[in-house]
Each structure stands twice: as C-alpha cells, then as structure tokens.
Length: 380
Ligand SMILES: Cc1cc2nc3c(=O)[nH]c(=O)nc-3n(C[C@H](O)[C@H](O)[C@H](O)COP(=O)(O)OP(=O)(O)OC[C@H]3O[C@@H](n4cnc5c(N)ncnc54)[C@H](O)[C@@H]3O)c2cc1C
Image (tube, rainbow, N blue to C red; front, top):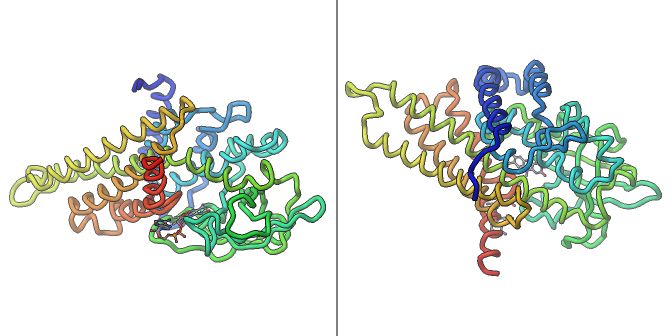
C-alpha cells in the first residue's frame, strides 16, 4: 500500500481546511439559527467546484477518484452538518447513479449543472415501511405509453426541500419483496403529482432540508429511467457502497475537529490550580480519542485505496463506515465530557457536533447492516 498523497490533492485538502476554518465555522451559528446555508457561502462553494469534486471533468467536475475524495472529505467533515451533507450528496448519492449508469443524454443534461452547483439533488429510496430493508419499498412505477406513473411516499430525504432533481427508486414489477423488480428514475419537482410532504424535525441537521416526498400519479417520461428496467436495487447498492468510504472520512473530519477542540480546551481550562490537561483522566480520554480516530482513518484510507484501484472493496468500505461512525460517536461523547458544562451548552459547537455525530451510525446503512455485510464476507 502506498500512503503518499498526490501534490494536487494535498493542495486541495489544504484549501478545503482553510475554507472551513475561515468561511464556514464563523457562519455555523447563522446556519443553525436560519436553518439554511447563507447564499454567500453557497456561492463560494460553487466557485471552488465543491459540488463536482467526483464528477468527471468532461461534465465540468474535478474528476477526483475515491482516494482523493476520501482525503478531501475529511476536511469537509469538519464543517457544519449542512455544508458536509450538501457536498456529500452532490458528489455521492445525488450524482453517482447518473455518473455510473446514466445515458449520455441524461449525463449531458444534468451533470454539468450538478457539478457547477446550480442543480441541487437528492436520492429518494427510504420509505416508512422500508429503511434497512430496501427490498420492501412500495413506491410503484407503472409503464403507460412513453411514461411511468409513480405513486408512493419517500421519507427522511435529505435535501428534498432544495433539490431540483431527485433520483427515485420505485417498483416496476408488481411482485412485492423482490429485489429484481425495481428501477431508478430522475424526477423533477415541477412534474405534476410531485409534492413535498412534512419536513422532518431531527436531533441535528439544521439546513439539510430533510422532508417527505409524495408522488401521486406522477408521470415521469420513460427517458428519465436510469439504466435497465429492474436493475434499480443493484444500482442503489453499488452507489451506497462506494459512498461509504467518503462517509467514513466525513465522520473522521468531525471527530478530528472535536479532538482538536478538546485538546485546546484541556490546555486552557484550569481547575484545582492547573490546566485539566495535566490530569491523567483527561489525558487518557484524549489518547483514546486520538487512537480510535487513527485506527478508523487507516481503515478508511485503505478502503479508499482499494476502491481507487478498482479492487473489490465492499467489506473494507463497510468496515471503514462502521469503525469511523462508531469512533465519531465515542469521540463526541468524550469531547462533551472534557468540556464539562460548556460541552453541554447550546452556544458551544461541541453540543451540536455531539448531536450531529449520532446519525452517522444510522444513515447510509446502520452499523448493524454494516456488520451484516462484513459477517457475510467473513462466512463466505
Ligand atoms: C438524518 C438522516 C438522513 C437520511 N437521508 C436519507 C436520504 O437522503 N435518502 C434516503 O433514501 N434515506 C435517507 N435516510 C434514511 C436512512 O437510509 C434510514 O434511516 C436507514 O437506512 C435505516 O432505516 P430505518 O431508519 O428505517 O431503520 P430500520 O431499518 O427500521 O432499523 C431499525 C433498527 O433495526 C436494525 N436492523 C434492521 N434490519 C436489521 C437486520 N437485518 N439485522 C440487524 N439489525 C437490523 C437497524 O440497524 C436499526 O438499529 C436518512 C435517515 C436519516 C436519519
């Protein structure tokens, strides 16, 4: 394994780090209060090409592969959840299926505008009766002439409130509970029969526009189907698998920032006449935080390196997601402990980041689902 990082990725990573410190962190209270990313920040993100990091250069993106994207995602992970999520969607679940399986016409129509950040996207898979069990979706897509008529409700769809293009998984076969009868569709909110349902109020995630998507006799042109009819489940799974490595890296970014904040606080906070950093109990917490980040980081880099080389990496991607999300949860808990009451206070970022870290073990495949994937490989 080669751990050397190409010069251009190093530079981009440093640029991202500076950008998060200088432009994002000062605006975090505003994102929380307003429940949206300020337009000025969105403009800067567009100018930096952050919506098209993974989108191929021929469509106006930066065309960066899985290893480079994982390294960059670590820096993105330090940013407020809304910024992290928006960049993650545009470079991952929002564009991946189109990049991998779209027709030239679909790619030419949408990818350049995704890469520029003009076209906000979302992936709509989950339903009230189908979370981990994607095979249980009930949203139907019935072929009628040159269109498919979609009916169903998707929920917890990140960015649904802002998305101008959604990739929707629906059942094209009447048989329920099978994985072969699903297809993917590009759906725009201007289509008759499309509407947003309720907004989800969640533990964290201000500015992420999370909502239900309701499709009622929504006529989607047949040309908007992505890939073959009946291959939607496989396409979704392949997109989620690749996304797991970048997701792991984002978890690490949040954990790393919490570690740095905790070390700074421990140096400054004086109790019993000396900085709390001098107490072994605090030192051990910092040591455990740093070690769990390091272990998860190595697993993530290795998984990314295998993906970059087009090697089979399903197990490593799941291990990286599992280790990094669990590490972020533990690190966030220790960060609150080290900060004492300040870690519990709403006006300090640690409290928000603690809440943000909780979803890492649920979204894009729960820890239990990752363990299932890993165990299946172990038992093969
Ligand atoms: C913040 C957030 C953002 C999201 N964004 C999106 C999005 O943009 N698009 C989208 O389509 N979906 C999205 N989701 C939905 C997300 O994909 C699901 O929440 C996730 O897949 C888990 O499904 P569930 O919540 O229905 O839990 P369930 O599947 O009901 O699971 C409940 C519990 O049972 C466990 N469990 C389930 N099956 C098994 C099993 N076979 N073995 C062992 N344990 C099991 C789970 O691990 C979990 O602990 C989002 C969710 C959240 C919270």
